[in-house]
Every structure is written in structure tokens, then in C-alpha cells.
Amino acid sequence: MIRQRSYINSLIDMAGGLITHTVRLSFFAPKNDESLDVPNFFT
Image 1 (cartoon, one colour):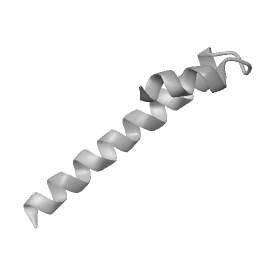
Image 2 (cartoon, one colour; image 1 turned 180 degrees about the vertical axis):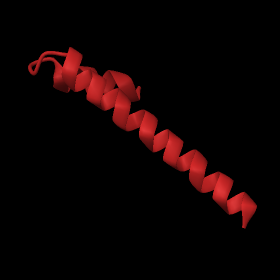
Image 3 (cartoon, helix red, strand yellow; image 1 turned 120 degrees about the horizontal axis):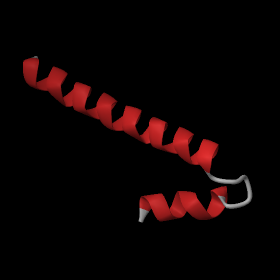
Image 4 (tube, helix red, strand yellow; image 1 turned 45 degrees about the horizontal axis):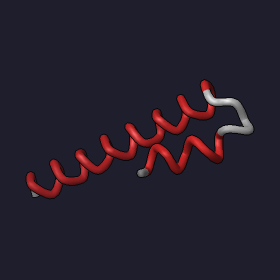
């Protein structure tokens, strides 16, 4: 049970980091460059 909890917590932390990064992208990057910046983040 403890191992599953730590695994789920790590997944939640990763998801939180992704969400915060995408929010920062949407705020700082212009709307036109959004489609260009998102693929660069994944590569």
C-alpha cells in the first residue's frame, strides 16, 4: 500500500509540474507562438 501511495504521489507531482508549465507557457508565450512552443516542450 505504501509503495502504491508513493507511486501515485509521484504521478500527481509530475502532472502538477506539467500543468504549471503549460500555464506558464500560455501566460508568457504569445497566442500565435503557442502552437510552436508546446511541441518544443515535449521534444
